[in-house]
Length: 535
Ligand code: AMP
Ligand code: MG
Image (cartoon, rainbow, N blue to C red; front, side, top):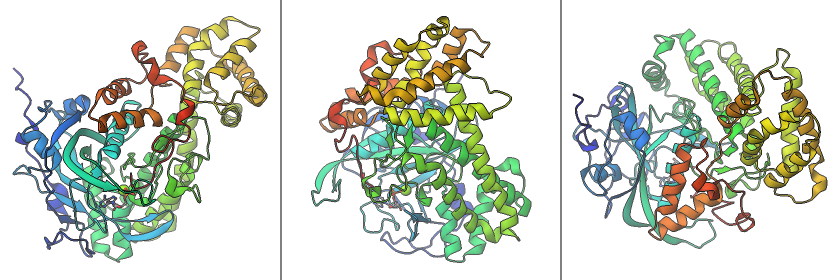
């Protein structure tokens, strides 16, 4: 008989990052530079009233954990009030380029890793608390997180996982019973907000910036040690570290990053702060802050008010920015190989090729098309779609979902789809002026010609499209509504939203309101349309 799952407070943790890398000998928990080390041991700071607000059953099943009661030892552990005997908590030292400028040491200023636990399948996962109190890397801030940003991280990282996007996960959301003061828009209107802690989970939280800080300080032995640690634990298939293996490793990081960004571009996700300290070495989406989801298809859109002068991290910039970030990583890894240009340059080309191929394959799947032996005309077709969606101010998620449902009817009628196209556009566009929709109408005619070349049954095409085009994404205003209700003590909206985001390709007829077009009032509403880095 299988044994009952062990609660989290009885789990055994390992601490490979701590035992295999260099730890800061100082225990002084004040903001300071930590040259010479990979991390600083640090204990979480207790909160007033740790209580469970949300729990990922899906991730918990992977880890073999039962849902804990609202209050008790497991939740105390998830909020930082209790540390299991086998845990060796730490904050990692890293640096990074912020908005294109080298920012020096950053580090885990409000994240504390607890240790690694073994999942049911034997794999190892690191548990990290976000908002668990100050560390030597907290600089001028408090090490805390507000409920608003913690709900956003919890919901979005789980939603991304269920959409098939590589991402860090979230196990739990715990309220702290403490207040945290934040000036949400940096406009002098600081106010107390409820605090929270998210327990996020990933094989590793190492970022590009962990390597960059070591190059910046010319800590080349530490650089090699960190590279070898990451290789042995997270890329064992590449073999024992050597110059050739470092080269292959960088290529694999480029490949994974390309796949991740291709996913973002096909679901309409805008990360919002693609600084190099927010880029995972495993190619996972990490650090959910002022992110957003496209509503009208607009490559120039970003939700991040901090980025309103340059739009560096706008939706359409993401593929280019990821490449720039990979170039900074190549620089950081260059001491590991004799001829860095020869060893690392080809991987940057691989990034571009992988991104283009992956995004195209995903788009064709969304459109119900099988790749044509001569891909060029299909590239022209998908390129034209981006432009037409933008001109029509079409809601990306709704467009693909409604199109999926329409396909069998469209294929049944060899002529006269014009009325169906018109009403599709009316349903998904944020612009009521008929004249702007000519490019999208023309595109739909072109698409139908191409679709008619497919040999599969119309119903099979529809099923394939519905499995590629989610009905539910974390619309910005829906997240904000769930946050406002949760701040007032009502978790119903949060739970409804989380419910559909776990199976975003299913219809859920009782939840149509969560798949609707953004209402007009939400267009400019702070929190719904705009966010700052302090979120
Ligand atoms: P982010 O823009 O959220 O990726 O954060 C950039 C840096 O600021 C990282 O080193 C974070 O750890 C740090 N940071 C952000 N918010 C806080 C906070 N409330 N307390 C301490 N450090 C923070
Ligand atoms: Mg960060």
